[in-house]
Image (tube, rainbow, N blue to C red; front, side):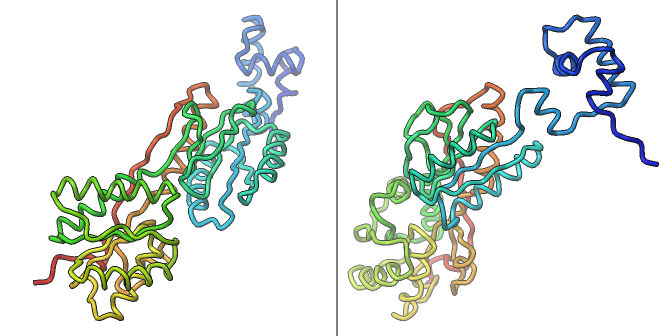
Length: 336
């Protein structure tokens, strides 16, 4: 016969106190006499009492549940962040409630009310781009951490990829390979990511004493735009020997057209993408050298800082997380 697991009711009965008093004693509350606390703790030890996750939540006044609110309905960037956060919450034995606002402000407010009704201890808000988003922190009674898309309020806690540093790393790689005529093809100018990656390119070229080949070409985040941009660039700047693309989609399209026009990649022209979207980066021929934003790590870090904020140790400001360069076959030394 399997023995029944002791409950807080058993502890209270053995100690000769009410369940409420037993809860206070086990939770370390100060409004319990020392002799009563000792009696409750002794009873708990005798019964080998171990509170469940739910019981611990009740004892601490917390639900041990957190909300994850995303606006990235496609999941291209939001999903890795969510997976990383969920890993951290699982290690901390926290229940996770996921809601997708699909970029709709009204739907977002509905989800926020629903999450608060579940008495969550905290919330991570995940954006669909690195463009700053409106803060929801002032209207919520629980700590909030923003991931991928930072809050517009500098007093909030936000985690974003360091796109300036990531782009700089990519261009430094091209320079180290002996590339000297480096062009830039990227996404829409109104994206923060576009501007940050262009700034990283500028800094790396400035440090190397090089001028950019041609003007920056901006268009959609698509392979179609990458193909079109390749046509324009290779016609206007035939001597270009490297291209830094603002996304893997653009890079894949660029490589396709470059090869059609008889340019060997990477012998004649080296190509670097951004995002490390493996559906494209590993399947493009040749496979793309690209920048990985380490989004799962970003999500885990955001979750860890939410734990800290729940404990009263918030870390306000925008925290930029390092990216890494993944080197594949689309880059190599200058062909002699």
